[in-house]
Image 1: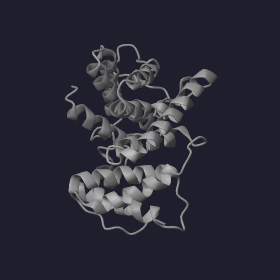
Image 2: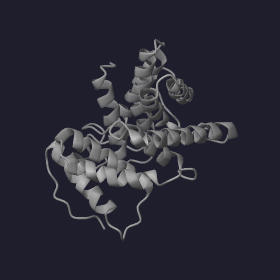
Image 3: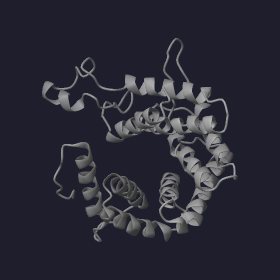
Image 4: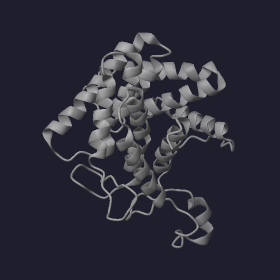
Length: 277
């Protein structure tokens, strides 16, 4: 049952409301929580701590990070391992003592990717996109280990699966390495990590054009899937206002998923922050 939390209208207020919602769930001993929830809650707490300076947020993050530090992550799903690794690597800037564990979890994530590729079975492309961010963070806290090379290896693997229809400017990522219907949650996740590949290529004097082209094509495709005044004709008039601006899940499923928008906004924020386009 969703806890009752007062919703606020300004941007910071919305983040605070969302954090209170997550906090109430994570601190409820009667609810079984996946490890991924602690990752997301901690990320949000870190953002609020940096924005407000309120150490109450940091105390919550410390508690949730302690839960993650007790896990071995050897038998945990790939998405959770990558998110936990990115979180711990970020948090190690505040608490250097967790740096070895953060790097250890990153290596588990790397091993999962290499094992999946070696097996040759179809792989969900979005499942390993976060590795670009993870190993960019590894590069920042452990210089001289060539972590950036693995991050770009993953980026190359992703864009090798991108395709475009004839005379079409956008680029599409299928659901898996074996094909499958493209969906905006997955493509959005890839889009949010490609700016990091561009930044790494620039930092180490490498050609970034293939990453730029892939990102531009990806963003164009997502934008084509966004609802606007002209493509919500099938929505009841009273429901159109709440749908416009949302992003359709795929060409078959008309649902507007919140994480499709979340990935897209994170991609846009990274593009703007580094002035990529």
